[in-house]
Length: 423
RNA sequence: GGAGAAAUGGCAGAGUGGUCGAAUGCGGCAGUCUUGAAAACUGUUGAGGGUCACACCUCCGGGGGUUCGAAUCCCUCUUUCUCCGCCA
Image (cartoon, rainbow, N blue to C red; front, side, top):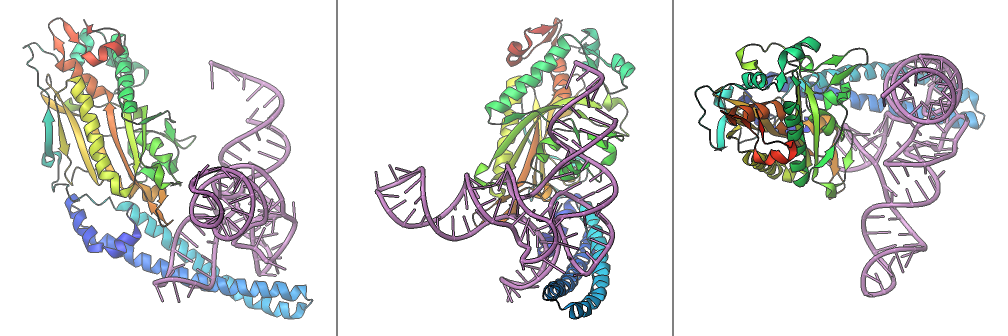
């Protein structure tokens, strides 16, 4: 959520920046400013009425104490009108504040200056690529065929017990998955991220805090009976650990990593591109989250990118990094780098990590603040990234590491797996 | 799931209708003393709105009510604790 003060001060600038998202926000911004003005005027009037009322009440109290009941009753009569007036103003204030809040929720984050203009993923800007794309034999298979051939992932079995998009990992497939999770967590811990285990279901306030609610409600599984949401990413519970917190400036940076399953309804996505592990309703992911001082957040973002690079380098997977264009940028992010691994047998790039800086957008919703050197509360910056998402990394490994004799396990994973090939 | 008790500032913990944004202790910050630190002493220390700055307003788990006036009384929801039941 954008800060009202920023909209008051820099409306033109914000409006122009939002054009990169192909949004014309002028009308919305103007309405917000009008409501803000109305809210403040109402507040001032209400405050004055309450002040008057408070003053009279104190006088009444004193008069009763000194036994002047008659004079007190005269004053009491005067408060009746004040009470009615303040009730009406209070109601107006509430409805105005609600309207304002609703509109503020509709405004996405302001893109960082480096975000390229554009409308679709084709306009994303490739900024880096590394790793050799292997030459596979003619009878190379996509990962869903390999999964069947070596009996390591069973999609049909998952359909039986849950539905499409809920695969069952078997034997060495399950072991490889667990190895990857442990390996990722170890790498993140070594880079200074503290490992956390968090709830996989969250309440509404948490969804609002990180921006999944109110807009993307349909993307999350909702347990109606208890009004809880299954997390779409560990970002939600981990970042919300800091909701309504004022942290000490010297505690920066706060670096957490967490492994969780992720649940996404993915309503409306079907077809060839969602085959196999490409798009699932439940998948595993290891996430990194940082809470940063505003001065340090972009440096931190670069650090996170370098960290993810170092993992992909060790796994020896061919990958590229994209800077998302305005049209492809998530609602809450100011700047996002996507990592994509090349899936050789499918001949396409698969997104395996998304690393973002949200600046104060989430912090404003979360009321996540720190005390600056003057003792004033300031909003912190939040960042997060996948390090890494499991299924597509697994797909990349299966497809890129396949040989006539089976699938080789990347060297760094062998100690975690306890085997060096699947055949 | 049943019965009872409770929810107050970073923490602990007073406060049962007016002078309470709230005693006291701990913690934090600043200072005195000290070569330095500790101890001791002194001061300071919740959040938000509003204002050029004051004033002023709101907040004692959430919501609603009674009253001229609510941390304090009433209703309701949520959470926590104790006991019972069930249970990985």
